[in-house]
Image (tube, rainbow, N blue to C red; front, side, top):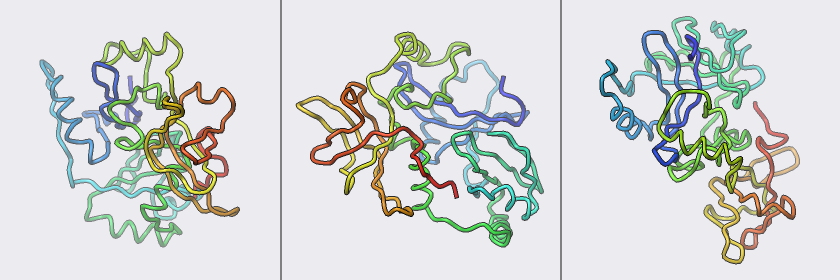
Length: 276
């Protein structure tokens, strides 16, 4: 029931309900366009091809035929308009053809985020137009800080094939009224029981962040850190992280001790984050 030129975020599960990958799917009329991290393409293509039996379906990797430029910040729509790209009035995960380019507005978890999909040969000239309209180039380090502040997990790092969907907190990747799908029994069983033992969350550390990995207290796993970095701010640098914490580890409060590192478990996204 996905409307034309709209998209949604999805998990691909195995029969045990574990997450094999994540992707966005867009209804483009004559075809569905799947967008995922390059590192996931091979395994997802292989997984999906196994379920093409009687249907007339072809899966094709677009490879290097499409490139993308992302923009984020409170003036994004204005910058796009000044560059000649109509962006006003777009809904989350809406696709629009504008000035010969494909424009996508980000999901609700990525406010002020837009992506432009185009042929690689067009990228340099578009980049020039956007910077002339006021866009500021940002590198991968800034993008990673923004991702962590927004509390957006990355597959392969924060989400792995051993994790269960409800543990990740990404409820927008699940639909409880659709027909049968691989892993549905496990997903529904978790929902009927009402909880999982741990949840994806944010951590704020006192001093330096601990190493990535699992942490135990008296032989019991209490938390796992999957991402950690330092983020600058007006009040100084903050040591932040993403990962998982067991619900019962929070019975005495949001503070946890991780082998000498004091951490406070915080809801995502982090407060005082910057979308610019």
